[in-house]
Image (cartoon, rainbow, N blue to C red; front, side, top):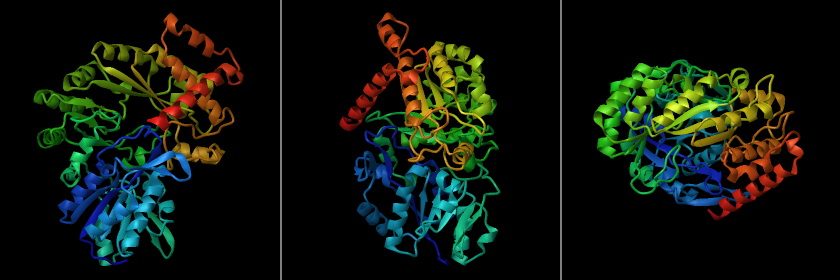
Length: 507
């Protein structure tokens, strides 16, 4: 394919989510923002079609699954928007495997308008499964990993009919065979332009009144995100982030970050700022410099790190600086309350014995404290037992936290966990790599139903306290062995499931 490319449309696909919009929120697409900045700097005409935020009030039930809805512009609206832009190339972000069908529908619409429009897909799912993505012949190229170093050489090669074999970070078809050329060079985060937010419908993101980690806040909530570093050196077996950003930590200059925050406050009048980082505190000296800069400006911002912070990186100075800067909550990525599971299955260096002191100090400073758990963990030679999962909930009951977030292990393509589950036959017959609110695996130790039953009851018990008011519930739900055969658990679980279903249908 040889094509002179001048006009480029970058797109966000509609989203398919559970009825009632469980876990759904609207966010500025940071990755596309950076790509837009690179393209604009190179003098391309760039237009944005975020079908999700533009159609956030539209939803359609899935014909074959009444428990799911699709949010966003409908196909006719999307067709009209693309046609009006007259693009030479369309770039679509594909972050989640469970949403890839929506990506495919966008690509199909693009090609129905003009077969000569070049369709490029990027994002986490595309990076994890480029060969699978390119089975769809409406898709021409896949960008693997970070796109800022890839998109301009790709456009040059398409325009000149050049040799794609000299490119890295792309996948394409050659004589009906899919060629995969992984990225060999990571982006220098201090030389790329800022996200081109001015090209995006920012007021629509603000109007949505929500963002990652925060449900709908209503009118006046103006939130934005910044990415202060890329990469994570740790080896959590369920994480797919390294496929995009790699494991080497690359830090943006603190002064540049503070300038970006100042721009967000002065130009966009934000009152809420959240960090999209994986490891904001990995360079503590740099993190404190950023916090001090925010404190000096006295913006009055609410700050947050909804992806979670690594507990072992937090000390007394960091806690105090975070509070002074405007952090109102502390989200701790604990993952498990069992040391053996952390070390031998998940492979995350959390030191559980340090948590009670950290949580006490954070409570004394007035933080709202969130804790994240992952349950149903597996490794090459181990499956997390109910006793080990019980340790996680027991720890949560001892710690004085405000909100507990429990996710079932989701084996994303490209992760170590996915390869293990595939090899050992743990993937359920109806496995879909999407959402975290239902179990995905079947193991020799437990079925999906058994795991969900156990975890549901433990979560309910975590909501109770030691007062006499909750004593009947604790006595009713407690099991002294063979709990899966215990009708009491099944009664509570049945009532809870019915309540959740009714709530979703009448939300």
